[in-house]
Image (tube, rainbow, N blue to C red):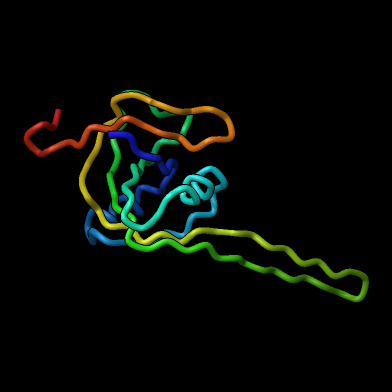
Length: 129
């Protein structure tokens, strides 16, 4: 099945999702942020610790369903007598529910400026290699 991928996630995040089966992530990475903009609650995604450039056929990860999704803005203000600086950064919060374990079959889209799309097989415990 074809999934949009979130890449470069921390190992402890993957372990917590596996243990708790539901976890909310705050995504600030630009490539993962833009990937989430194309999704809706109920869609499934593929999560992996590997960076986008390191994904090859056989790369393992988790398949999760999006339960809730929101975009948030962080605002930072710094000032002194001489200057005033205001910065904004956007992030996405996604509540994910674990569906299963997956393994990449092939990369279907890895064009610059687009989301990474992977053909992923769901791995059952009896299929593990």
